[in-house]
Length: 566
Image (cartoon, rainbow, N blue to C red; front, top):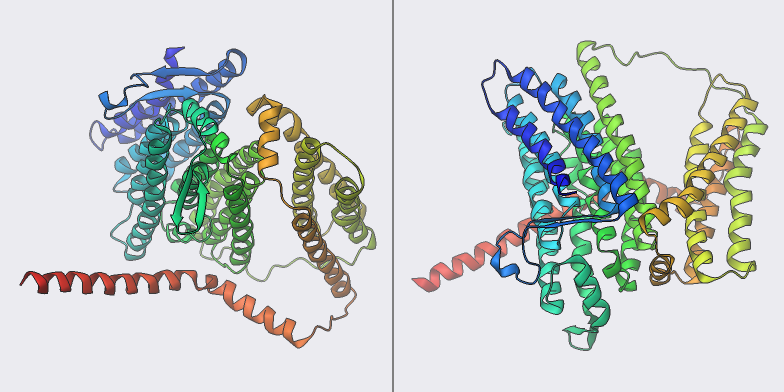
């Protein structure tokens, strides 16, 4: 099965075809490159089938025991996780590239852009199929350079500033990632995935970064790796690079939001055995993911630009992905990034059509047209309350506090039930905005969506988890490592319940023409929260302030050195 090496190379061949030749035949060469990306997708799908039936594929061009003999340790290790990611990347890459051929053909630098898009697909395929962590890192940091170059129009001031901010923050993550690799090699003496996991499990190393503080070697390594993943996946507080990059062409963002930004979730899954040895890092990932979900959602609601709204939406979704990893539900995180990849890729491509039509027709969107609000329906309201609060709450409380279940079934089932609850609530609340449709149809849609989401998550809990992680003991190990204290889980359930109760109560009272009297401190908090979200929580200004302080300190150091040399 060594022919699998050709799968990542096909997009590279397409990129070379686009670069070769003059501008007259560029459109024909770009169309020809589409076939190479399509062949990569077919090859990835066949690889997925082969790996699922025959087992992982390992191809090495070096001796794992003598990495010093090779500066660039090339090789491929394709298991089910890699094959799934390759299929996602090649499929989305093919669709986005095909769209880009028509979208960018009149651009002055179309040849550079199209060749770099195909090269990015090549880099992504090599990254997810890397045989060792060093090869993964090399392609990982190549993505940082590519995101800077793919900003495209560097003659535009805001575009250049956003590209530089993107590059700077991603390099911070790359440095943290490299630090984790160096530390892992120092502690365990290998960069091979399988050997690294075995030695980490067998070796108990304690580090003392500060007097009186000791942490395990696995915790120290995964902490640095987590920072690298958080940067690439635009999680708090490293998320500001993503909105800054939105001046780039829309097709590039379709590929970014569908593939590149999922790198953090892939990294944690690829190194899952190592992360499973550090409950502390998993809990930190859960906390940061939760903060990112809240911050990203609040900032998204305050945007009036279509691309910025989608960008902050992606930040929130990446928070969900990291939060799922922090709960030990690694397969759920992979399914989330797959679903988000296809969804956000298609949404950004459609967003490009909307922007194009708005430029051709300045009157869009049509002003003055509004649907008449539908009369309040108690049936719709009660169905929403029943499916988003009463039933999920009874099930959660029964399983968590009443039924005596084994740890694996209890912890894993609780995680999947919790995300069923959150996902179905979001979908059902959005259905209440449907206008001009009979109430019983809306209620039926709510119930159908509820059952559909339950089916999808049960499929995840059984089939997809068993596909990615066939060993039940391994799944149990991750869930045990990430298990939350009972009091924390109960607090989260109570908080979510209060939010849902408040939402449905507000909708009921508003529909009846009433008003809610709230204390003054709540009104003040609401205004402050609105102001904070409008100003993106002043996080960007904080970074700018830190940058100025750092520049002043650096200038003083440089000036002191010059004075000393004199």
